Length: 240
Image (cartoon, rainbow, N blue to C red; front, side, top):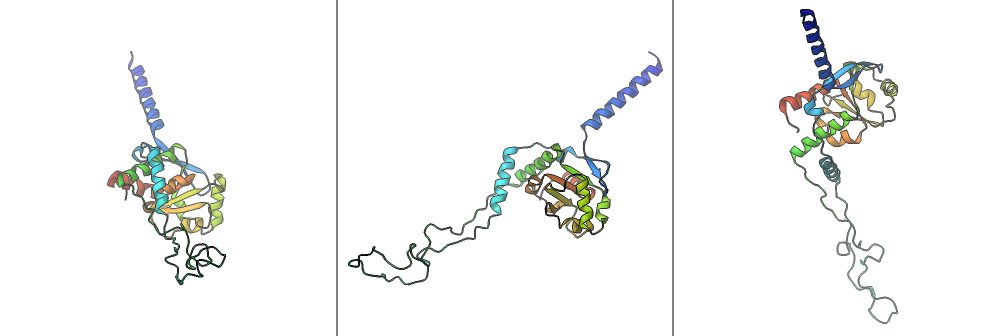
């Protein structure tokens, strides 16, 4: 075999390897303010290609919703209602039903029978389970192609809700439930431009929870926030 043919084989082998590597890469589209796809952002497989445990996700949602309940509602029983304990009329001879005090549940202003009382609805889930659910939720969204990257120019958007709404309209997302993720909790132009839209939920990356990821159909994440997420998991390797 000649040297030229050997060189050609080596080149074709290298190109095929590159194609296979690129196919195996996890990427999301990166959009600019005009609604044009500017490029791709590579996602780390440790975060966006994690095992998905649907049973554990269901458990997390149940625990999360239970922990949102305050449980402060309370009604008074007949022993707690203020009023006299005197027998309202004699037992016999009136032709009426037998009654004790006026605080009985059948009287107006009396106690409530079997009413709700104050209680704690909170449930527990451990830190490792939270981590698995968080990564599993991001993986589900990545597989659904529901994560969209936003260019850094979004942070310098004019303070007009109309501009951000027009961007969503170009992507046909104006009627979808959207989670917009920032790098940190501070006022910036994008936050001020998007916060008046009823279908857009805002969250800083350090305050993000799995329920927010799961309940929204699409996730818009800034390039800066994605970098913070990578550093948090790949360097610190933990969830708060």
